[in-house]
Length: 253
Image (tube, rainbow, N blue to C red; front, side, top):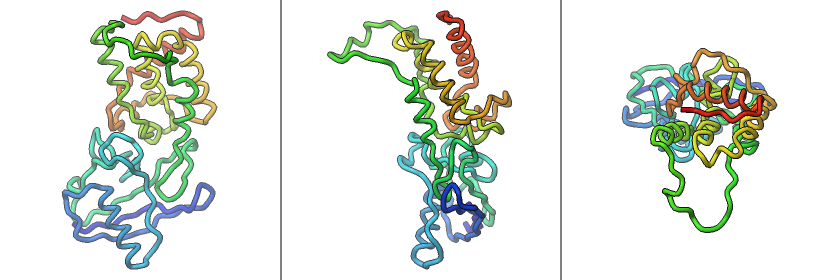
């Protein structure tokens, strides 16, 4: 496959960015998108054309969420339920032009090229996305009984990898899907109940403080989430928030 790539190049958050055009040739359809970028960077380096394109990645297994790229107008590209590192070139055609950009959100400033600073998510987790646990021996796995449907819902919410696709997809750059997933997977379990009221207040307040927008109710976040986190978590977050504001414990069936 021969492709034309239009890639966003930017020195840092304060520099003026621009698209640069590069051509890559003989790309295998079985090649992953990040491998294709590796091939481009090898060419740029060996031929002394330009500085290699900076992009974030780590596991390349769809687990870490670092590889977020805006590809042809969609977070993570034109395949559903996958991260950029799981996107393969067979989803493109020979001769295609591909536009590649970083996440566009004020709380995610550009570090360089396609790399953005997502420590805003870390700050939200640090504000309250945890439980307090005593040290000592490991408790028996069956000492706290949890209904299966609750355990399943908590596990589904815990699949969120914090890639930021929900923020990139939202026209208001809302982090509601991310925060709701982190609140939900703890709120559904007995271990998360003691700190539930403080947790949701602290995390939502930190989200607002960092400049994330309000939920648009267009559900673009759910549509573009590579782990297909459900929007029902946002409803649970809102209920948790209201109950915390009223000082009441919420009982969910």
